[in-house]
Image 1: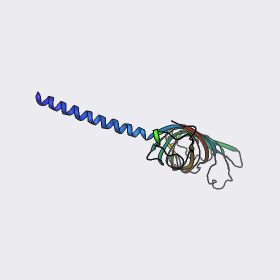
Image 2: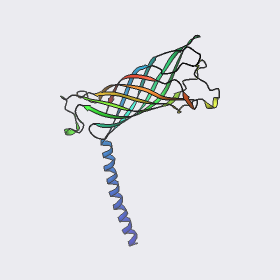
Image 3: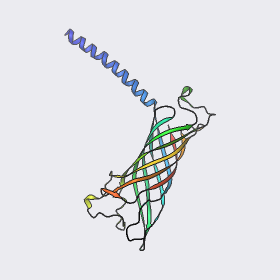
Image 4: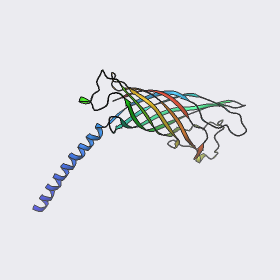
Length: 228
C-alpha cells in the first residue's frame, strides 16, 4: 500500500511538471501566431493553348477571393502565412460558333513565405507598435493548392471537357490546380490590423477528370484584410 502511494505521488508530480511545461509551450506557440480575414478582387486571364484545328479567342472575367488566414511569426521579419479562401474565377472563350463563359469555384490554400522589408518590427516595448512609426511593407511567395467546390466543366458546351465517363468527373474536394502565388503587403501602423496588398496567382497545372487540363488561371488581385 505504501509503495502504491509513493508511485501515485511521483506520478502526480511528474504529471504536474509535464502539464506546466506543455502549457508554457502552448502559450509560446500562440504568442507567435496571428490571424485575420481577407478580401481580394481582381481579374482572371486564362493561359491556354487553342485546340487543334480551331480558332479560339479567350477572354478575362472578374475574380474574387474571400476567407481566413493565419501566420506563424518565426522572428520580427520572417513569417509563414497560410490561407483558406473561397475563390470565384474562370474565363470566356469564343470560337466560330458561339461565345461561352466557363466559371468555377474553388477553395484556395496558399502556403506563403513572407519577409518584411521595412517598417516597425514586432516585439517592441509592450508588444505594440509606435503610432507615429511607418507601417510594414512585406513581400511573399509560395505554392497555392486549389480544391473543387463546383465542377467548372459540367457545361455541355464546354469544348475542353473531354471525358464522357460520369465516374471520372471531377468531384467536390478534388484537387483542381497547383500554382504559385507572389505579391506584396502593407500593414498600417496607425490603424492596427489593417492590411492592403496585391498578389499574382499563376496555375502551373490544372487537373480535370484525373488528367492535366489545358486551361490555367492567371489572376492579379488587389486585396484588403483585417488581422487580430
